[in-house]
Image (cartoon, rainbow, N blue to C red; front, side, top):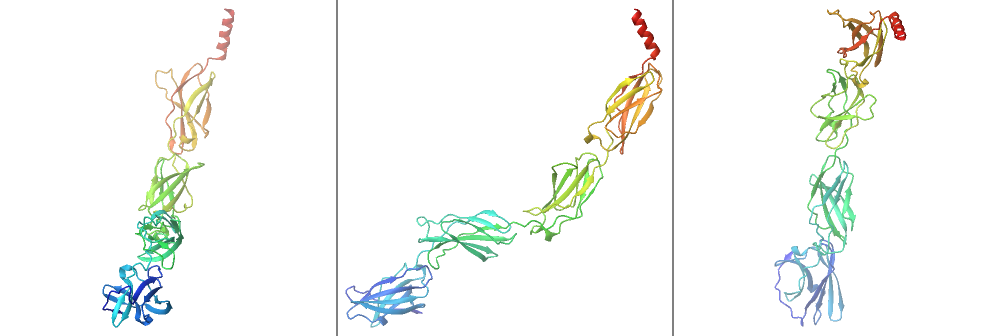
Length: 433
């Protein structure tokens, strides 16, 4: 209710309001004001009223005269105010009315405390799927807006423009972990400083935005199959992970293929785009078993690995035998020995070796004779018999596996020795001489 008055300045020696004393509170909290009036004779309490003045308008809404007491030549009239406004929305003034003339007190402009202000947005320091960590600058009674004492801070969490939770942090702590949030959700965070007393929470700070992390995908890719097409390669195929299993609005971002050769203690990995469901692993060793697994990842987390699937690279033509030598000869035979490169380069299961040999003293090409050795070992030895004494032969070896035959080894010469009789005669001649 607004009123207007014919106001007149009072003489301090005459009847009038000597002072107005409020019980200072936080904004918009209930309080009491005491008007002290003097005069001879002493004015009645009914002639004293408390108003909230806005410009030339005087309002008594929410203001009630509670009591009156006399002490000497001064009367104290107490008023209850339901909600004390800040000075931006009016001043409080006490008016003594005598014969329709109002005599006002000096207006009160500090009936409320100034709430503390946090001017900077909080900083996001950590994020999980259900929590966000914050820190902020401490409020200072010397440097920042507001009246002390400070008792703590309120952290406000907004989702879609509405506050969904708030929590109190006691002073002097300037950090908080907000928990029980929803994964993969957009939130805004603000902080307000809180001074003592009811209604002491100051205005909220500017906001900081954060998106909680996505949960780990709830399933692994299925339908994993491994096939062999080309040497040193394995083709891997799988079924796309359903979007609801990605546990993230952005869905699956990529797949990871893990592979390891049989017996290996560590694995290799490859990242595959989310728009494909097949991939060819290249650069593998020949004719080895590989364990294959696959995972799906969203923007934040990786799923568990799928069940293992075994794939084996195909055989390739074996390398030529090495270290070919002739460890011994007789008058009618020679023995040839050889070895193969290390097992990792065998290119498959050795089925047999083929030995070819021919005389080197014939003017015309007499052609090669061949013998097979059924031996799958990495090293071999074979004796060729029924040969001509004192003859040089060119000898080569090749390896046969499931993919075919290797190239021939480098040739070596084998020489059968002369007959035993000739050897004995030669020895006798040496002794006679």
